[in-house]
Image (cartoon, helix red, strand yellow):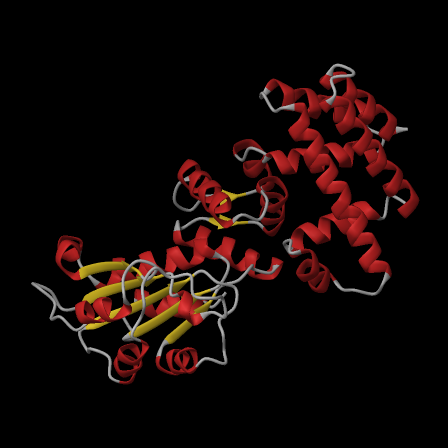
Length: 338
């Protein structure tokens, strides 16, 4: 994550054109909001902020707006969303875009306008002339899934913004409890910082006190308790999930997903793949791969295959109403603990 761009924006060192792209849409939106906040005053937004969806509006219309002088302000901000013509996907746009007009604008942008492309795509088509031209003339921010190291940096920076500190162990606990979704993490950080106040410190205990476990993390903990033969604690988590009105079939589905991931991580590790390669192949966050890798060491491949067969059988029994749903899952957890 390139936090240098954010520092420039906060210092009001603006570029005339920005390209924000990648699969981590939350960071794209955060950067866009930051640009708006620091570049135009609140009372100017009605006059000097425009947002265009390029799936519905031709780019030349948006550029005509970008070339219009600001009203009662220093600059205009024009946001261009969903520029799918930058990708290799077949043209799904409802409109035709005059790309030559865009090419001309990129070479000579309006000095009073900040033009922002928000492209929520993992990859752009680097073969296209317009992509090369845009990357040459724009300030580019690429935000795909953050690595564990970048997540730590992101969390630390977010906490510092609240004038609060966080211990490294608390960061690890936060990722364990809340998962890796940036929107969830941000909400939990903001909540903890509000609770502690300025100059507070987030510890493991703070996370455990204030951050609720996601359903996926509860499933992870359930499996962890089972494989460590802590049956009472595993059943307690299971009963808590039921108490929170989680459907047994949904719990079973998540158990199957987690065990499938554990099996895949174990197999790919055996073949010599590294953590980042496995994450890329399976399209999951590297942190999830790391956690699954730790659990995979507690099983043989044969045991994992047997467990997945048991899960498939439990799924069949639940869907055919052969036994009480809750009882089927209880029996599966007890068998697993053995």
